[in-house]
Image 1 (cartoon, rainbow, N blue to C red):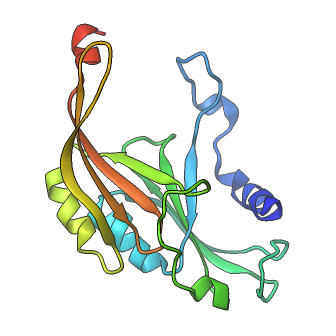
Image 2: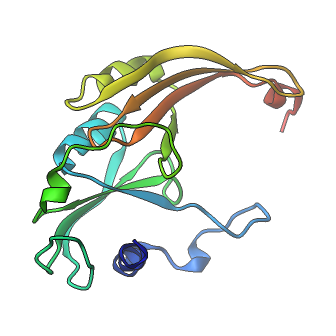
Amino acid sequence: MIRILFACFIILMPLVPLAGEHQTDQGNPLDLRRTTLIVRDIERSLAFYRDALGMTVEYDQELSSPRLQRAGSDGVNRSRLVLLKANNDYIGMLGLWQFLDQTEHDRAAPAPADFTPGDIVLLFNARNLEEIFPKAAAVEGVKVVSTPTLRRYPSAAGDIEVMVSMLIDPDGHTVELNKLIRDPRREADPD
């Protein structure tokens, strides 16, 4: 696994802007730039993330990764990488990476989401949740865990109200789509 992550880093490093290109006004010098998902069928993934959720394609290329060691691969490791953007040019981007010469392991059905350590949840804030949830739920291979439901999260300033929904994408990744309704912490702070 470490080798795969290192290979991903080496392959994708040229796509990262130089350090001085993005300035943060926070004290922490670390930005979470992008999450890349390994997918079985990139077109089906694009139907979900691009077409239903509305992300835009920023990069779409075929690559080869001969030094990447994958079980059952031919050693060439031809792949397609698509980078998607939500509403920021620098952070919160999503990569979709499909190996084109798929192994039996690549073609296997995704493990069911069981919310155990090692699983991830991608969370998207959607001002248009009412519009995108039905589109996302209708994509082939998507499973609905929960429809939009009002949840209240306690805070010192009062309850934060959020419409929360959860789906499993075609590759088994858990996706939360939510819409902030009310955050009393922001109401109390005019900044």
